[in-house]
Image 1: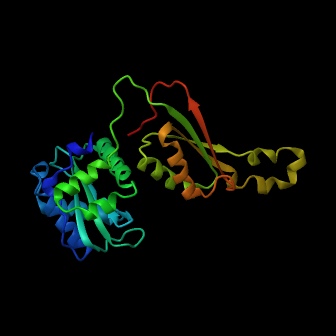
Image 2: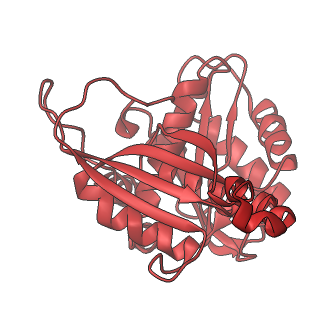
Image 3: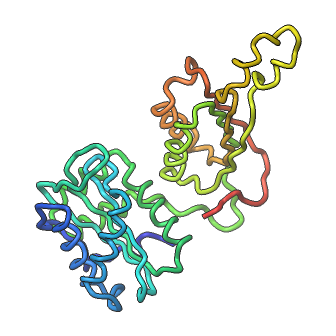
Length: 274
């Protein structure tokens, strides 16, 4: 689903008023109710569902940006809109910064797969370096609308044209890194990956007589690893590696993580799960 088909200027705002998180949610709900795509639900219902979603954890993920999103009974189409709060509002963001730009996604309850795809596409678009500043500088709602769409990834090539892909294998011994890297994958548009649970050499080496006295040490959990296997468009590989190393540290010196990238001359099928 292309974002331009669901982005509604009718609900966008350059000067949304809000001093608290609750006020922001109410104002966002009133903006949504202005769209024909949300004609089957009222602002109070939208507010209740957005507030319920926020009670599970803030959608303010940092860099003055939040992506409130929810699925509502009665909606048959998806709705995406952007609201700017010039002075910012405390939204319990992860980095504790006040949120200035809201991207709101609303859709039907049964559209789980499309909802995830839209969320990933928005995350990719706002990951571009200057998009937030472009939106904040917009002089009109139309300029806001166009600035965002300029940063949306171009559509894939014509049918039958196969993109050049690479197979990325990332082996991790630290579980804490796994979810951070999967989040990066989603933001970069890698919508399918296989995670293989495996064991390092240390789990077995204690059975070798020479190393028998290390039996307790060798069988510690640190010998359990997970390998993420994903197909990555060749043109995205370098940027993806750079983002991974922002999380893991320099992989040339990091212990407990290793990355392998292989050229794939031919492939058929997909690991896409969303």
